[in-house]
Length: 108
Image 1 (cartoon, rainbow, N blue to C red):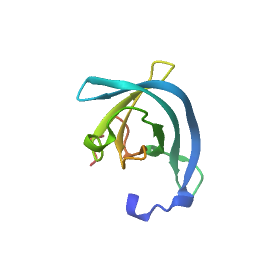
Image 2: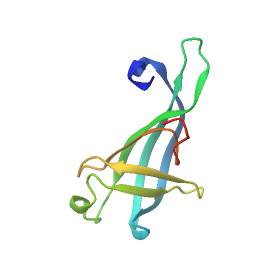
Image 3: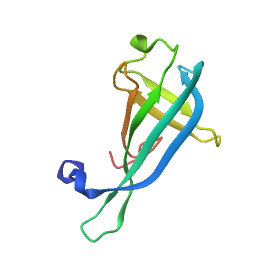
Image 4: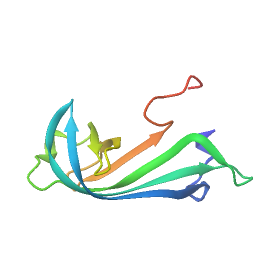
């Protein structure tokens, strides 16, 4: 089903901007500034498709050595205490997560 979804099928539902803590393998890596958006998949009828989302954005890594983290799943602890599991896509701090939330459902 996700292969049938196009970029137009996703709606911006939340934006996270602030300063938080980056972790990799449960080890603190340092403080980062973040600007991350969460998009929700929508059906043709306009209703949300539960659990199907895309999170993308950018982290300002500062002194954190990005090279070893590229391609790795990291945890971003937001200023409000929530966390996001993201993949660091490149050394510029671009992050991405797609799919069924923090844990996959039983359907895939």
